[in-house]
Length: 116
View 1: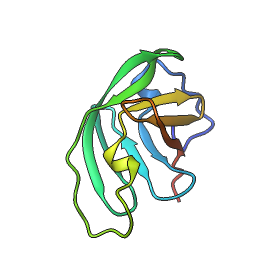
View 2: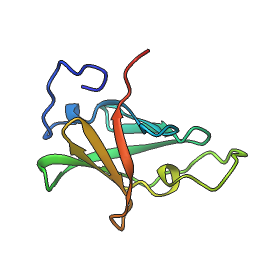
View 3: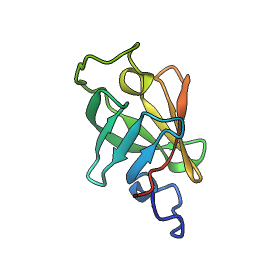
View 4: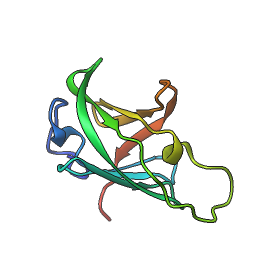
């Protein structure tokens, strides 16, 4: 589970996604809750949605589909982040998650957000 590298998690259950994940390049933090809710931030704007587990190239339960969501519109510098406006699918790749748009364009990777 994220933040607990000694506990192996295998795709196929919500546990593989549940927890907080962060963009190793900074900014985005996304939390998958076991009740199917998802919250996150790109470092300025916040979002909240729901997610469901589906089958992908990694087998049953290796993909989380993120439902479309409203976002806060803060006065952020720069353009809208793809983490906020485009995230649709998240694939579980071992100890990483790969986020893509509905058109399968990669947004980036997420790694477990280890508690401070």
